[in-house]
Length: 226
Image (cartoon, rainbow, N blue to C red; front, side, top):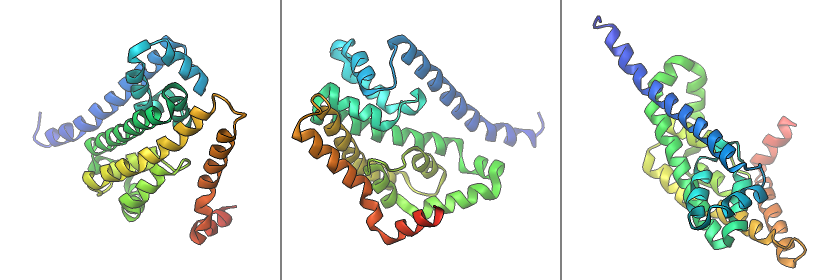
């Protein structure tokens, strides 16, 4: 092998390992869903977790951590956490899993490497990188906390940006429990949808979802796109 070929081979090793890990997780997610015959609903996840007995919380934690590879939206699985384990249990398990999931995505993205992505995606990546850098950990934390906020694109993008891990992790630690609590409380109240508690939580979630519209800049952007 010539000296000029070795750097290329070395630079490709990280991305190839990263893609192999992602492929393995996707396969594992498919096998898990097939084994437990889980439907994409909180009730389906609740039934699957109930079959597992004492180690159900561990499986739920794993499902929430790798939910994107199982094609399970965060609001489905977090609400199921409230159904399965109550508001407090769902908040602890769901919030912890969101934090771990975000850190794993950040780590894999950084392992793949900014240089490799910049080389293959060029100016498009540079624009995206500047956007993430400008947002910073504060906005990432707020988006994580908001029930309808963006998760995966920000978490992957942060790993490819110049944002340091410590501020990113701190943003997740502050934001993830808020999101988990909102959906866990909603899921726990689903046991009896006719109660005043369920109506109050539903109204609270709706108000929280609409809260960003109180910011004039967000309203201008939304109306401009419309």
